[in-house]
Length: 368
Image (cartoon, rainbow, N blue to C red; front, side, top):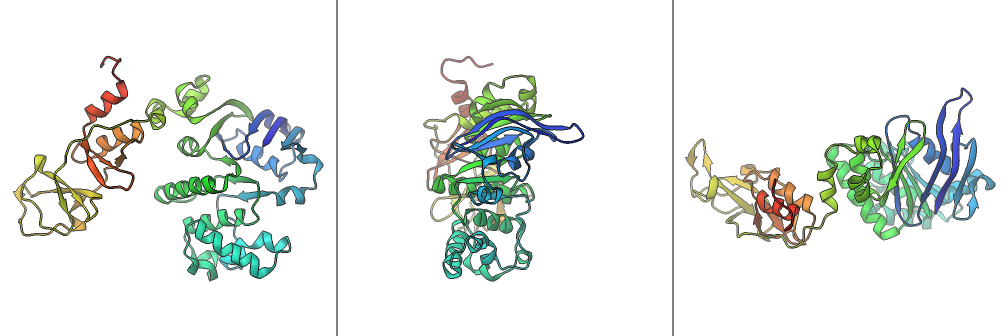
């Protein structure tokens, strides 16, 4: 557990970055700090490991006042991940990950063995171990940064916008990997981001800070979206918070209809309902949609369906998932029919946006 007890940071020029912050980050959970520029997110984070010393107040690590500990001993208990990974350019990837165990006196062979294990845990090919940071992509470097923070098995991890420097696709993959790792390791994590979508996706609880470093609201993502405490929080969370809240509402059993399909690599049909037919692979996993007409004319029925023929962009809804996923699958589909799959990604059928909206409205609500 990490607890801020009236923690304040005031600089000599009178600027108050954090003002009597009262906040608790529970053990084994992810607490996300989010807010506009100048709200003290990073300052608050760095006060935990005393990279920035509080002016007044107390920060507790379990039952210990962090100010009572030598800073180097405190930091050995805390993993730290920053935006650009902060890797040592002259060290190989495996030795970057093993840095803290080396410093703690762990045998080099044992430390490198543990580093290799962690590289696999964060989804990196062991072949990267002997490379240098400059030889890796931004997303790969961030994975190394996470592995390095885990190497000493710290109970606490601080993460300062670790995924903000990579493209949206890689960022989404890193977020998913991060959640998988947290399910496995169960660390106490304080995570800073400026992105409310990232905060809602990753946080067990989200702390929204105001400019000047005061706490506006601390709540679960679902509560934050459905019951913002004031106009500032409502504005920061965004106008589409009602749609985001659907991401926390279970869909229940989605009504599905049988959908005609064609298998990738097989001959294309010459006609279909609405000129679009769903393409699946040999395991019945949806791959995209095929327009059976070209330039207004039917396709050659002998031509096989290839990857180049596919219309992509539609998302998939998993049976028993969320209402947001179901509605998004319908709205993003080129055929205006949401594709529903089972837990293994195999096709179950499709549903319409009207059917998804009926689930959202519920049986006791009147349509607008």
